[in-house]
Image (cartoon, rainbow, N blue to C red; front, side, top):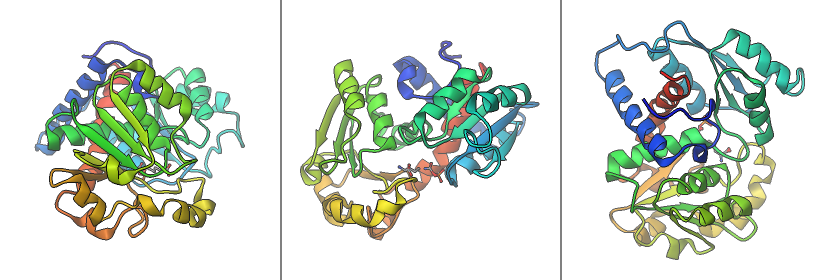
Length: 309
Ligand code: CP
Ligand code: NVA
């Protein structure tokens, strides 16, 4: 059992290094149980989870719902048209009502403030399933995948190439508590949030570099990581961003510069031929599907932690 922390899972740096690593150890254990024929481990038996989605999703919805079910619980999907948090009903009311029915709430929202408000007013744990600011469950799954393929994260070089978005913020918050080498290569004007970068640098835990040169950045990388150039909520900018981000495509040439030991990762969904080529996603060193699978295992361990199980 890990140390008691906040009741919610909203940002990776709300937890210390030992807690993060013990959640990941737990993820490995629970993954092994699920992979075996053993179906007797049912810690979520009798529990229900409300899942609020203000945005579309495949991985987050299916991995949370399946994971919670496999460990004995029941998950309720609430799509963008269902509760319309903040529109049909105030967030603070949603939080208090759902807390009366459910043992845990998972939410994917636009404004980060919405998840903060939800957590503030909910009496049950709230898990962040992506906001415009961050995506902590994704990065927990990514670290689990890196540990499985590379052996460990400490001392390794992770190079993110593209938009300084929610994925990057979670990498920076992770780098504030767990030591590794993180590089973000983004075009001018698309760098990650300056306050988050400053905080991560000030923490002095990891080596952090923000650069505009993807070719230089990927040299010696253990992992090259990509994400869409236009996130959910920015799709009308997609065309324009394609021009701005041209030099930031992860293609065979860039992976060549990264070297033979570099794995390719992407949180998915990917736009093949845009931020990454088909060849890079399909290459033997691409670990995007083990990475997607690990969403479920990492999240099961996160839920066990916040539920105190
Ligand atoms: N990576 C991820 O969160 O995928 P979805 O948007 O499909 O949930
Ligand atoms: N940055 C992407 C991640 C999707 C999982 C988005 O927010 O749309």
